[in-house]
Length: 227
Image (cartoon, rainbow, N blue to C red; front, side, top):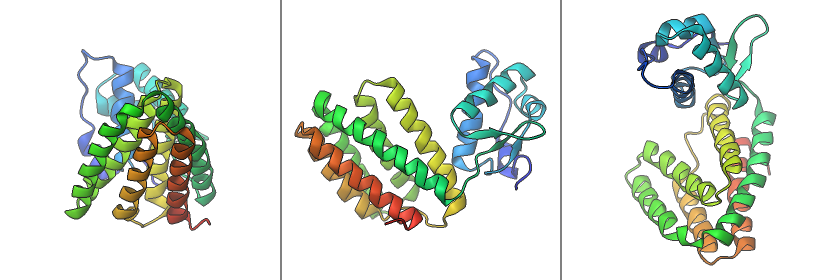
């Protein structure tokens, strides 16, 4: 198990702007570092260390960690502090199972309430296609997340959107430690996304749900080998 911050995190976690809400800023800084991989899965985080590195008191450091614990990105350590999320293949399967169900609800609601988002979705897919053509993996991943973010935000259901975001972030961390696959083949993602956008734009909730379930299922199979 990794101990403490990895080098990149130590160098990038600088003091925070004290004029901003500290608890949220602490959580935001740590969340970004965890999801980006700057803080390694399994790394131990302590309140005193975070307070020192971010130049804040222990109270916002502790509360920021509690926020991340509720989001599933860190787990309590048996003796002190917390550790960044670790997991196995079954954890990933469980998360994909949850994601499929919630994404299905989001796609249905988007088709029922916001079919007009199809233009925004198609624009994202166009940018995604360009990113894949130039082999820009970072842009590929961002377009993928932007597509799903647009759908969940179109539902108007903040709780649903929050849960899906948390699952997405946990999967990013687990993908990093459980597979060396750099990402699902871009052309397959683009094909699925165009199908999902078309179904949402047609206002057909059944077609939208079916398309996104197939998409999540293929992603699960890619990362875990589950049929």
